[in-house]
Length: 236
Image (tube, rainbow, N blue to C red; front, side, top):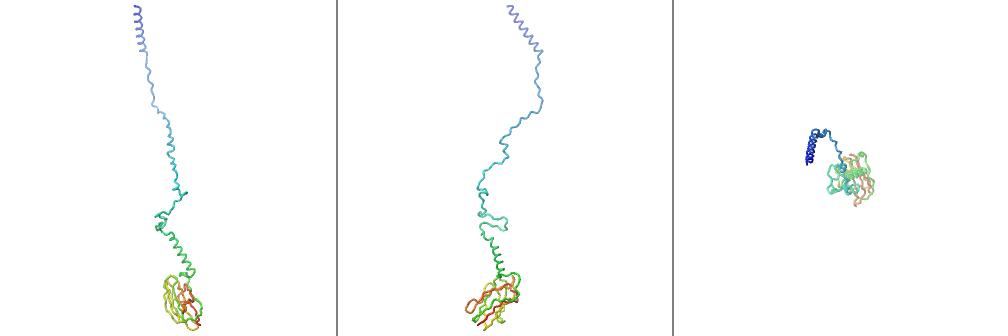
């Protein structure tokens, strides 16, 4: 019994002594100090969808809007045809109107070149003959009109130097005079008293016998004032 008690006391004394020695010699290990260095940045992972964000989206083409496949018609109701025109045209206008002015100009030129309209330039400064005829008629009916623009042309009519009409104003409709024929030679003169405001004296002339038969249908063009167009008639 004494031995057991001694052992317990000895063990207890050794334990306390060891703890005391360990407690005086033990030094705690200080916690490591970390410097305030810049943290290494984690590389960013690119979003695959972001790489295509700037690429325009592909749109399925509409064949009805593609003018290379189905050209759009410019002739829609009420749509202005030309933005460069001084006047507004729409599809209700006659498409042939644009050619009218040119056609009129071409016709006017053709008439002038054919001697059927005034303003051709040089005046005819000489007497001209409209033909020689033989007849048994007692008289002639002579009709005159201005075949060109109505610009005030005046004509004097004589037969063998006798005045039949001292002044006839030519217009668009025919004016007529009756000329009695002498036996044998008759010279009928039609004198241009002036030139019109648009050019020389121009006239169309029709001559009928006493039975209404047309003897001649002729004209003079750009005749200068003071000159004559004449017909010679022999009465048999």
